Every structure is written in structure tokens, then in C-alpha cells.
Length: 462
Figure 1 (cartoon, rainbow, N blue to C red):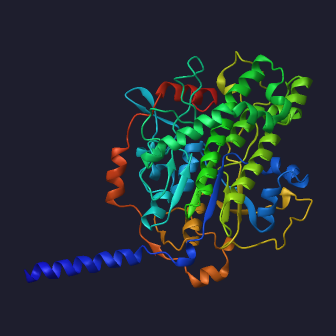
Figure 2 (figure 1 turned 120 degrees about the vertical axis):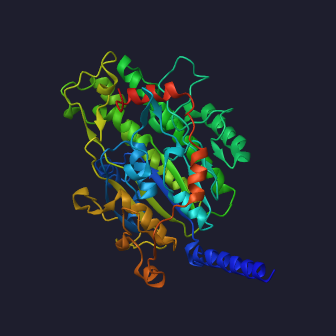
Figure 3 (figure 1 turned 180 degrees about the vertical axis):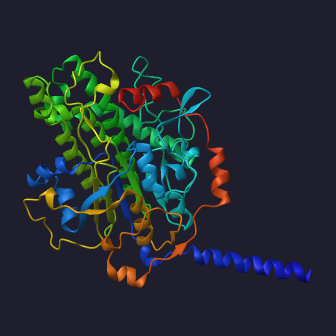
């Protein structure tokens, strides 16, 4: 009996020490919004900033730090975004492409294939509330300390819209899209509201281009972009709903894929001089601003989120890569192979963008406005995709794992914060409990064939 009492006392002391190890400083609980903007390209932003058309982004730049974020090869979105979330290489985190081969067939990776913790798991371990909306390879949704809305699907099949699952969208009746599950109906209501009003939203974003006459090829490009624009609208509206509820949070992350898709599909319309077969003059006039218009819409979405956020919210905007022209001698016709449809791409891993602003971050350009003209030629590399997670954890007072491949970007964090809360290290954040939960999430992706079809249309697989 005496030994049993000693055991209980030791167990209690061990539990207390574990809680103390996983405690975060009270001043680390300030909220942070993380905008994961796929394919954000500085060469597109530069003239828009100078013309005053990205005021929210310019304001963040004026009160923070900004520059290039080095990407990696391969630049497939699920691979890079998982590396950003884990600070580990594809070989270590397990997501090596969009799909993998099994028994002679291609299958889509799901969240259960990720072999290591992501930032939402680590923050949850330390009791921090994290809301994660639309991040790549999060279906089926995980149980975290907060709300997760998984990026459920991709599709290129249009013959049965009622059955089709669109990338980044959701569908009633499909389990494990939202965690906790009792919030799924709320999210589905937002989905339906967004879909019902999307034509009006498209007109507000793109003006006359949303209803302009289109050649067969341009219509194909438009139809294969709408799903991404609609998905972004869904996730941002979920974020706005969470912010309007005033429920406390530590990190709210929203994935926005529209800049990447618009770049893939409409680069040739925006920069016709880079191609041997440019679009017709009328289509350049109608659709040459699709990319710019979506960046302007992105800026408005960021402004709306910040307006709804608590005072003193910090902000991180990161992109997994940049974008530039591809296939300059292409024919760009409906009857060519899908991999020849893209006029913008990132296969050589052009650097993306990183913008940080708000409490805890260094104000590298003191003042309330950005000195214009802004020139991207002056931008410096701030770090790489593996460095995002260690920097986020350092800002939250959480130890950095020695098995990370990135480092803390200390130049971006206020020296007073680092002096008060020196960076700590542990061997790893992974544990047996995560591995057990992961195994239960290895399941077949919904509408597998449709997912593969869209990846072919984007030229990622054959």
C-alpha cells in the first residue's frame, strides 16, 4: 500500500512536470492570423502596391518585415505546404506528391499519411486554440484544440455537379470534413450560402470579365478556376464567422488557393508578350486583369479578417512559391494535352513571399505607410519554407524540435521578446499518441477518380 501511494505521488509529480513543460508564457497568447496564400508572386504585387490597389498588404509591410521565402523542389502544393506545417522534408513527413501508387493504381494522399506533427498538433499540445481552414492534406480532419475544416477534395469532372467534390469545397453527407463534428452543419450552411451568392461575388471581383464572351479555350480556363475562387470564399467566410463569434483563439490559419490557380490559367492573358500565340485582343482586354483582380480581392479578404480580429493581432502571410510564364510556344487549345493548358507555373521553385507584422515581429520599416515606389529588386530572402514553423513556435514560446529542418528567423522577431523568452529546444514533438491517431485516419479519399482528373487538368500527373 505504501509503495502504491509513493507511485501515485510520483505519477502526480510527473504529470505536473509535464504540464509545466508544456506551459506557454501568458504574453504568448496574443492572437495571430496566418494567411497561407498559394502562389503569391511579388512581380504581380509590385505594380499593384505602387498603384495603391493592395492597401491592406502595403499597411502590413509598412509595419512589419517582408521579402522572399525560398521554396523547394518539388513545388507541388501538398508537398510544400506540408513542409511549411512540419518543418520537415517530404521524405520525413510522408507527403511526396498529390498521389501515390498502390497495387498499380494511383491513390490520393490523406491526412493519415502525414508521419509527423504539424503546427496545429503542436499548438494543441500546448493548450493553444488553433483554427485551421482549408490547409492541404487535412482530410480526414483531425481532433485539435480548435476548429479544423479540411480541404476535402479536387475534381475536374463536370458531368454530375451534384456528385462532384471540388477542391477545397465541402459536401453534406461526407464525414470527417469538420472537427469538432458538431460544427459541421454550421460550416455546411456557410458553404450553401456562398454557393448561392457566388455569381454575384464573381461579378464583384472580376467585373465584366465574369460574364464576357469566351472562346472554348478561355471558357475552359474560367471553368477550371471558378472552383478555387469559390473555395476561398467558403474558407474566408468560415473565418469571418469564427472571428465574429469573439471566441478566443491563438492562431487562425486560412488557406487561399486562388492566386495560384489564376496564375496557372491566366498568365498568358496578363502577359501576352511572353507567348508566341497570345490570346485574341478582345480576350486580352476582357481577361488580362483576372490575376490582378484576384490579388485585389485577396487584399480585401485580408482587410476584412483583420477588421474582425481582436486588437493587437499579429499577421503572417506566406506563399509556398512564386509564379512565372511557362509553355511560351504552346498552342493553348482545348484538344491539346491538359499539361499544355497552363501558361503560368512554378516547377523550378521560384521564391514565394513572406510578410509578417504586428506584436512580436520587428517593424523593419517604421511608419504607417510604405515608401513608394516599391521595387521588388530591393527584396531580400528572409528564409525558406522550413523556417516558418520554428519561427511561429518561437513567437508562441514553444520549444523548437531538433528534428526540424528549419531554423527560427530571429531577425523577424522583436529582440525584447527573444531576450525575455529565449528559444528552447527539445528532441522532437512527435509521440506514440500522434502515431496511433494517424493510423486511424488512413482512409480512401472521397471521389478518388474525380480528384485524379483535376490533377491531370492542372498538369501535375499524367
